[in-house]
Image 1 (tube, one colour):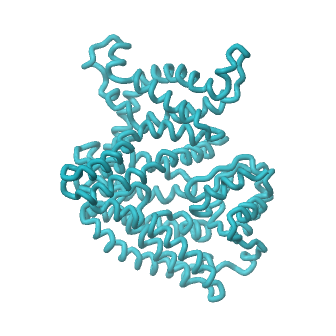
Image 2 (image 1 turned 135 degrees about the vertical axis):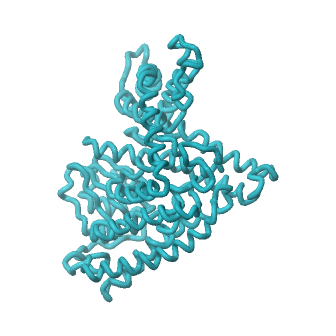
Image 3 (image 1 turned 30 degrees about the vertical axis):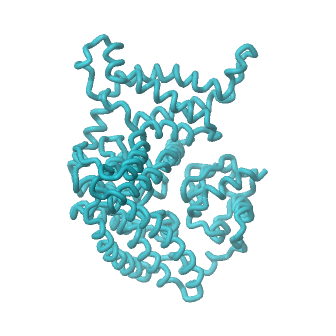
Length: 485
């Protein structure tokens, strides 16, 4: 597998631990609503909910180790997740300041400060990747009959525990250097303030077509480079951490997404509908309405973005620029809100009583302005450049006899047919909105049929990898396809 393909897999695996964040956001959001002033100090129920949510936030590093190991494993087995946990415990125990002092025979006060920060998401991701690779390599190994009990999956945690001893000794030498580099990067980006936030948001959108935005997000949203924006916001952090965890700063890598996802992209959807040919308006309306509602309520934007990403790349670049501008403006004005899943209405409501939420309602005002900007800019570009957005394609581009079924099983069968049959599928997986596939022969797929079935986009990666953007039902369809023989 090429490097890009592997990074795609890692990006997909990162979504496993990230998927637990909504639980923390809901628990803590309700807690802050119950006790907006005392943050749990004036209400036992609020304290219970906030602490329950904090249990997730405070253990994100180990969740990354477990989640990435599971997500990268070949068969998504619990033994891979257990191996990730074992590996993380071995590494973090051996690299604790006290253990390092004892192993190196030096006074505790001479141990590098980097080892006080060994329990972080970067180490969790690293351990998860190594554990998954060991699982994929050794989970099918059969030992001699005398040791048969330890064959297969039971063997992996044992191998991982010994491997992590070696990894720990390597990190004992290189972790201070890595830590200094990550901290310098975090401080550099944080030092750029609002401009840095805008630059991040711009590249966040640009990386979505390749599925690599998850890796970028982990740097800004979690404790990979000392920024840790989402956990700091959800837990009401007010202590300084890499220059971002202060009131008016925490949330700066999140807040500006709300005007885009709740208002800007729906404005783009309206522009695409307005520009569609008269005979196609009804079909485009149903597609754009569903995608816009998904973006507004939940912050799931890919179905809408992929509707114009490849058909009109210039619109997507404009979208990325406007996203960067929105995040920059929100950060500059210190209009702050955060999310546990994405920047939709649900997360805005949940975060509104967070102690670090500042003038969150102004994000709605900003959003209304961006709705108008997106609508008029997109409409002008679509008509002025005659862009082939949905409903404006040439007649020959719409010729396919595929019709989407309302029955999920039948729809999955239709996708399999468009993908060249079940035998053509080597590997089947999904993330939130896209099927991630490895094919034996990619030349036999029917892209037109998949788009008629509701796919917003088809992305080809390397020689045999394919991604099909179909919306929130992607995982359900992937599971059904896996069950087909």
